[in-house]
Length: 150
Image 1 (cartoon, rainbow, N blue to C red):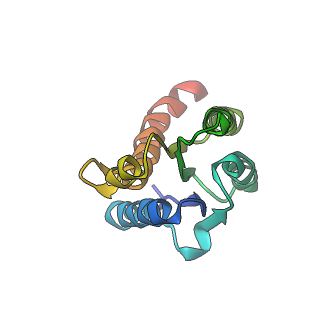
Image 2 (image 1 turned 120 degrees about the vertical axis):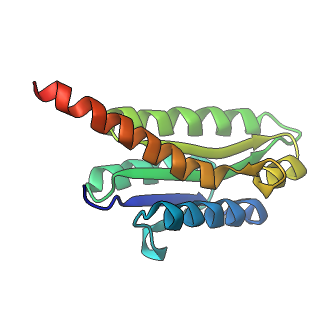
């Protein structure tokens, strides 16, 4: 089996959190011997923009999977709900339409402290977990593919 290559789309909004998510994702890539260099990292303004970039990355045919990383922290307006809902739906759509794993590594928390806890803090690193999700999903897809050809 050839070495797997993934792209990482990461939100620049809430960088104190998303930089840690990216660090975790790159660490997982090194551990799992996955191709993902700085050239495979695509910074976007916020979580709302992740689906469009993921869609273009998926359509490029260059990647086996895409990790979408971001952090949306609830504020005093309903903006949180719209961003979270549309980011999640868009990322799911990209995965289903392109038949590749697109991991939802977007934190949706009540506070920055909760986000930091999930970005390398005491609750782990969801960026790291997103890469593992991609690889686990690729492994399952590889088990299914030979059956489709029968």
